[in-house]
Length: 145
Image: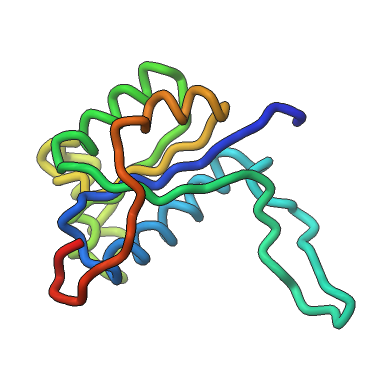
């Protein structure tokens, strides 16, 4: 693929840095499945044979108000941009995948409290969808970003 892609992880601005890192890691794994071109499949190794991350396109971590994050899901879907969400409901079911699948299957998106969304698609489209969000700058250590 020669088209320029962009990935974005957008999180509630109220999440602390650890929660942001967790959501970003989980969503990035899902985005790699949705868009295999995001990573180099063969891997990248240095002269010592150590494997390095093979990310091929820019990825940004952004923050926004909870309502903005939820609305982004619909906007991305409407634009045809592959996306996936991470919810507080799912976060509470650590290592209980079957329970997670059951809960998600019987609940609407709003009920699950989306706390992060990942999207990957054409650079210009992803930029347009995420232009109202701010760059994640980390946490002050008090649980607020």
